[in-house]
Picture 1 (cartoon, rainbow, N blue to C red):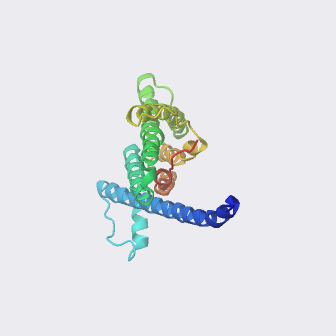
Picture 2 (picture 1 turned 45 degrees about the vertical axis):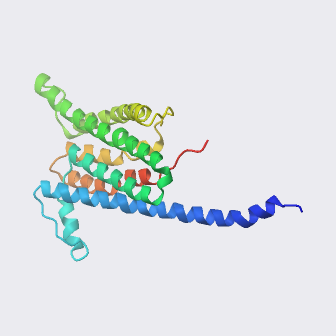
Picture 3 (picture 1 turned 180 degrees about the vertical axis):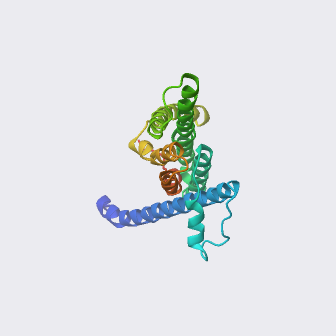
Length: 235
């Protein structure tokens, strides 16, 4: 009896692909849900810290809830809280849907949090404060919104590079993973929210600052999604 391998593949491959696609869709949906839940939770805590009361029901009073968030201007600590909650939510929900790739998701979470958020955000804030410190001591450079933005943006770029190196050390020592997670276009793309942070801080109290702050929560859904959908690299 001759077994036709091609016939077997043609029979079972479509079924396998269908199951895999359903699994991928479930993981993506779960990751978005977890990341969004994390961002909303962080926004609630941040709003309370700023003394702003949020209506109890978003469903019943969506416009009032959105109006509350429009009043917020975020600082470095706020951004780190939002990113942490997003990544934790994306990791938790994504892992629940795709547990076999939990290690890859944990590694991605570390890269996202340390490499793309904590260190770059702290660098950006430090850059803006450096401008003020230099002006106080040397009366130069002047403290203007464009110069503050330039200091913050330059420091942000340095922070992304430094953060990537730190995440490499963590992955090597914690996960015994020698493969270096190099910076990709995604790592630079997710810095859009930190650019908004620099814009907000350097233009504090202005309409531009409030507009920039409004973008930050939505942009922070991305790192949680990337964490939750991460899979092991197959070589």
